[in-house]
Length: 250
Length: 309
Image 1 (tube, chains in turn green, brown):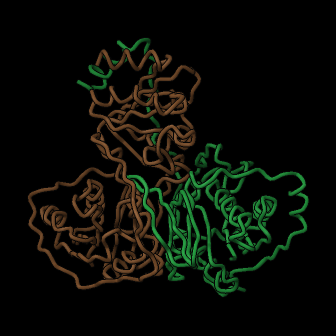
Image 2 (tube, chains in turn green, cyan):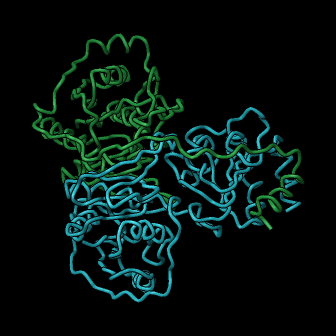
Image 3 (cartoon, each protein chain N blue to C red):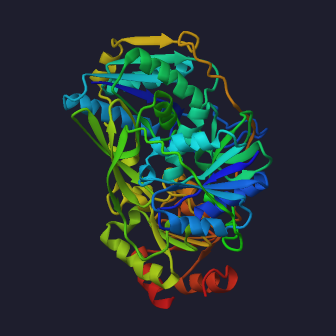
């Protein structure tokens, strides 16, 4: 089978982002960028399907500026066979991303689309579900385990109370949760080899998709500050403060 | 036009998150309909009808909806919601699962995890793990919204008498099926609605050592949570994870034990009213958000705390 893996370029997960002082957006000046951690898990899962002989081809795709090539090259170095960049300067919202991906799915006809459950920048958690919905495909969101057999995929999902397993007809959309796998690192020889792998660039116009935003960001501000706390010296003092000062225990 | 709120429940019990979501709906407008979709869920409907300020309770009680498969629920909600101004659901694993399908079917954006309502089209939501708060304005004709429960108080749960209206729709897409579930059984309160939460991190060193938290949790009536590091290390299951991509909690008292305070964890608990941190590393970032910090070895501090509470 063919597997499509959409990935997103985001800030590195260790970076603590601050709002710009004029509140026009997050301050991303000179911030380290990376593949969204959940997308990395998606790439890893697709490569494992290929290594297991279940998948024959893994295609990585990203939507954004030319800079996203960096993350697509990482996906190629990790083991994806080819890459597609849908290049656009506008900040595409999840609905627009899902529409662009749908257009690519119709061209490429993958049987499985694996993507991260959430991007750590806008924390939307929408794209996979929207894509599945637009394609009338089933979805296995927040996956911690997948198993493919006889035209179906069983997805074990992380839900609020524990785990739920669903069986989905293929083609299907899977979104990854943290425990699905532990992504590998790209080796130097593979990074060199990745440079020779096929790389296509498309535009939203070529895909005939209107990906213009529906939501206007009026401002981006810092969260309310917490008052500075104190260090207590003993368990006794802690209990005393919680009882008499904070009044949260009796 | 009225606002449609989707009730969060498990066919037996109406979940508290529904009440926070109704509060958010009331801040948007006065005409609110509540949709209960499930199977054999009369007990839930009874409770739903008692919530004050609801004009009617729509009920889709069909076997199709028993296991809340997103494909089938998404289609139903999009159909019912198409003549509403807003569609709201709680940002639970269930709401997060089906709501984007609804938005896509209606060709509108979704506004995820709002924490406040500024007007009928303008909302606040955290981005970048809560390090920024975005004020967003939607230009869509129908606003599809998930609500972060910690951003809104519970509404009253009794005193109303909304009429019940049964729906005939049975939107089974037939492309997905429920296989099984393993739900954690616990006598403790649910993490997301507990008044007190005590969480352990990598410093707990093993899953067995989480027992040290249990005695304290019993005395305080607390739920037990964990950091992503503790989940990644295999100490405890993922449904205990508090953080950016786990559960978002805001109890009256949050006790973080052996948790360093990574950005991802803080995103899930920093709106708690009072935060206590117990960690032997005085430089741990968790102390920057803690109201009360205790620099101590947790293996000494926890037994002492349990015995003195």
